Image (cartoon, rainbow, N blue to C red; front, side, top):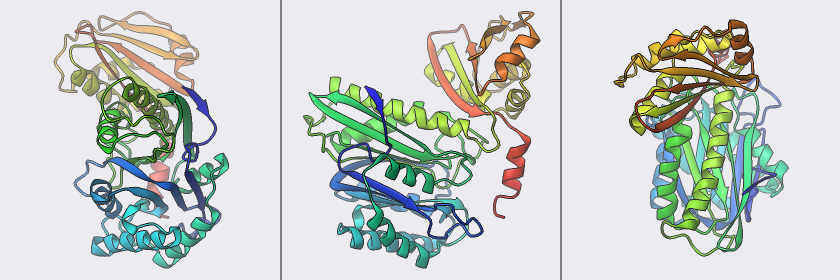
Length: 409
């Protein structure tokens, strides 16, 4: 498996683009609408927000993915979330899908709709229906076309997020690429996150669905920026079979190979979102090792990565390890509090700061140097078993408050 150029256009048969249609009022020059299109029908699998309050596109997409014969296009906007918009919001999804179906000459029930932005506002449909036609005319299969789409789904993101890989399955070259957006309102169990992965692998819908649901547990469900689970989280994978590999219909070597590629894609995108958290200056990774069960390892890692006090310490490059022990202690997991070891790691080095829950007498200067990098890891050895889990988040800065205090203005 090797990384290649491109994102959602890396796989055979996929085209994409993005442009500005004027959804983000007062933000002239910012792209706000994207389209992804497959020249061949795709099997689709998805996962969605765990929030009881679900945006119209989430409810619409679940119906399409679960019941339509196939999916062939995605239309996404940024700036307005189409959440808490009642029946009008649902009808607007149907209108957009119908318009996309018309201009692309595909069934309207093969179109996925995605939205992200301010909750409670209705979509500016005149601009968006016109935008669907403009997007269809501009579609392309080059890496730069994928980048246009990735840029168009950004809200408070500071950078676009995309990646692609190439691998061999069944003697055929398979491509898989993805894009996502997410910077705030991000918390484990899906977040304000939109993620779309395209691939030319030939795989059954049943196997793809199983893979996606398992894969998300160790990737997108392990990130947190601010503890808020969004109304709009959607992660969808489209596979059009154009690689012409022997169809993956059961577990085995080919299934495992593609699952590993999807895991690489989703891990990369998840980490990019965590590191681009609103106002963040550092990606904060928490690795829990040697826990008694996987479930407990996950709970412990999430407890640390979501702690506001720990996040503030990371922002201040302060090795305040007591906050980490505290977060472990209130996680709800039973463990021996006298046996925990804690390490801080980054490109600047590795430092053991706690052994058996007692300070090692480490150098504060060295700790500050390690914690001053753009990617910082807290590695925690629980010494109760052999299970592990990794969670990703970011530091908590003054800028986070500034961004969210002024979000609608």
